[in-house]
Length: 153
Image (cartoon, rainbow, N blue to C red):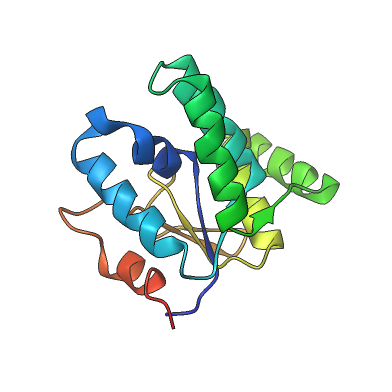
């Protein structure tokens, strides 16, 4: 699986700066550090949600959150939602397969050529819009499928 294009979502970015998140913080630090050297893309939605969530919850100051978000925008290729992604996310949410925002992340990732998404918000192992859902927090260590994604060629 090494070399497979994948994406990270908001919760991983959130835990990356949330020092009070214990093991999730440590895991997120490892994931983001390794992801930079791989074919990992960030949806602009995830970066935006990260900023809103960490500042709303007082996890980090707005200036620090903006600096971290800008660093990620420099370090990772990004994917923006298209009009067709919005339509697909609306249909997915209306069908009850995922929340609108989760569906938007998955469809945007699919349009960017990602075949996997790292998140704890969807069913681990499921496939949505051709994108495999992997929960990096499902086990006491980084799961093997996630570790394989984080291995640079």
